[in-house]
Image (tube, rainbow over all chains, first blue to last red; front, side, top):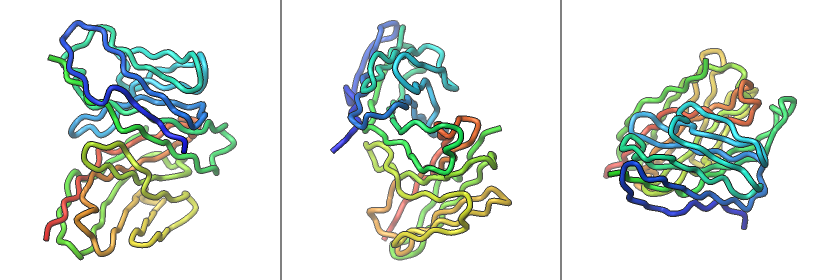
Length: 119
Length: 113
């Protein structure tokens, strides 16, 4: 069965360190997304990609970067971890839709999340 | 603009019906989704509704859509303890090319005996 996996599931690190969270999907989806989940804020979009070599900033992209060198992976890097980046991070993927395809249902599929603590 | 709002908490007695409400702002959204998040897990797609529908029923779940008021609700009949989770409403607007979802903050449903 196709799936989307995140690693590690839990990580503790120190401020100032570089951290990379992995996301791997076997759905062969073009779209991939990174969210962070914080109490009272729901899910906020960090970065997203619509295909290989494509990356875009979401609403809370400062301090984060992504790269898309293949279809399956979208690693999320915190260049210099800050305590404000302590959160639960979720990766998601979906089939890519053209604007004329609004009538098609293509939901996002989520990984199980990475709980990141920055001390 | 794009914004999705939900109440943050709902408590119900086991066996009663639960109704979780959501309002959204973008009338261009063609699909609206409900996701369920159990403790320590990711989001799982629970159900969805297409914007030209008023209602969708799926076993114990009923989704109602009032497109004029941009109001979405999820009714869970005969609520069980296994339904305790966070429920997220999400819209899929044209502005994201139908490729992005805008999520609400989530409603935590607590089911008590």
